[in-house]
Image (cartoon, rainbow, N blue to C red; front, side, top):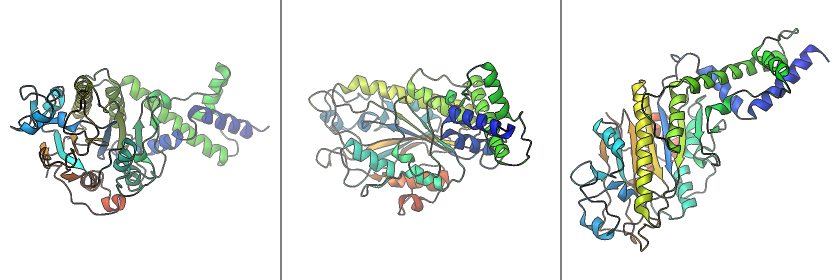
Length: 410
């Protein structure tokens, strides 16, 4: 067997074992984008989407503490005015959201009120599909973020997952499959070597120390591709090993994933979209303690992430957006919980947001079968983010034109 043939087999074998089918495509894009942070795209805006899985109780996240209807509907769950983090004389944040209340004072939190869509469904699965495809009247297989990525050539994106979490529908349809990862270690090279000597030989081939005798050809092309990929994977490993956060991240799963996002953003890989989720919001019973814990986790993680990146000069580049498949009913149930509802607020965090309340809080006296009537179509929020933040034509993604909402400065 010729040297070329042996080298090629060693090279391709090592590469397949190391990364599987999806990661090399990302790493090779990262090589093209990453080395010089001054290149166009190195400082582009970034969107971090945070999914509240299960149906978040918006009334107890953004609290109408002076509304008598709120107090009457929730004899055990209503949060007293003395405990909320007040935004104005009517509305406040859950008492567990100290960090986000501080970001509000710093001008980095926008609260979009009363978000929903016509003829809302209270099914977890259908509602989540609606939000992820931005298509209440259709059953689509492509997500709104996947479509957006078609208008962002070469921009990597990431789904930062828990161990058993599947890739979200929102990212389907992207021109290149979006990697779902839990740690940076997943990008490290793992050879198929039987012993140390074999491992060194495989790395020698990948790093290019074994040269093709025939000049340009298939081996040289594969070797160059693998060498670039290996170099990028080593860089990612160094990012994780050397990263020193400039804010204290809580010891929670959401904070861990947002810290990973911060590492990747600060590395100037050119990534534009990150997707993370936090579960547990289906609070049909004994809601108070569960929801308080979730609000504390969300606030702590989002605050640490923003402060970390702002301290590194990325505060004006990053926008965090939260959503849940639906809100909860106004009236608490007999189990001291709340059942599936409709409209709910969205949180937007970043250095360029219009701080404070946006939109109109829904009426608690004018309900539809016990549910809030939405005041802002969620597709208006998406359209504004697509057009004004990501620089992608919203009509191409959403299939129609939607009026923008005032969530950004200027």
